[in-house]
Image 1 (cartoon, rainbow, N blue to C red):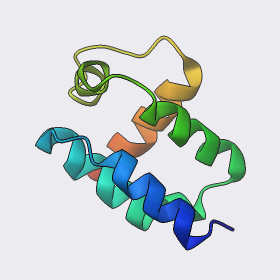
Image 2 (image 1 turned 180 degrees about the horizontal axis):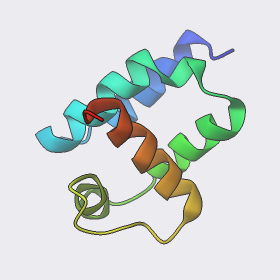
Image 3 (image 1 turned 135 degrees about the vertical axis):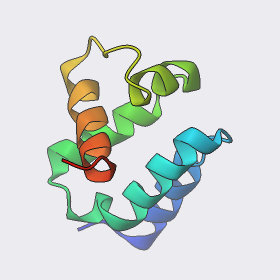
Image 4 (image 1 turned 45 degrees about the horizontal axis):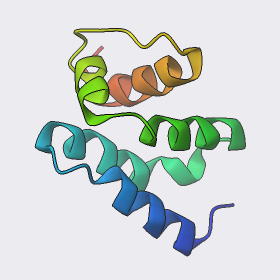
Length: 84
């Protein structure tokens, strides 16, 4: 279980200052993060360490992350907002 302090920290780290990223990351951390298994929570934290330009390219599907953990999180976040 994730405590409120950790969720608050992740919320602020998820706010990137780039609207395209904020609209994906902030709702994800608020609505989904606490339900993830510990390994996916670790992956999300790893994703937050990436540069905004890289995140933007991945979320706009212009590039694919080489790291499998990062790719899993990008897909998880995109699959949540894209219609099937």
